[in-house]
Image (tube, rainbow, N blue to C red; front, top):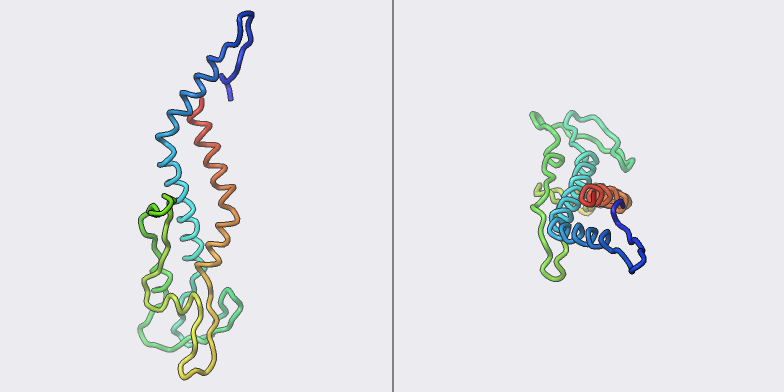
Length: 165
């Protein structure tokens, strides 16, 4: 960081660089909250993008298809029905602070009534077996969890670089 330093002279220390640095840091205090919210929104958008891409789309021409998990599913024949309702259903709630500790969180959800059955799996009608879940949201969240530190570090370096010039 340029301009941050201590010069030693005959009569003592010149800490003007440190005082300037302190003032710059105090300016950042007001920008910390919006920065944290921006990072949260960014990570939420990354999860949302991945979960939408990973969500299976119903096939209604009667043909079979293989989903991402490798399971083969038989499409149904329902006249006039088009797939994609579940995929289009994904959305985020506005970011919010938790009451207990003030953390910022983003909630990603799907209001389509059968979303949880596709996500976690379900029993077949009549108790004749179990359909495995796809875990689209959980897998997407785990993927972003692996890269979140790098994403935040890059954003923080950009934020600090622009603010401390």
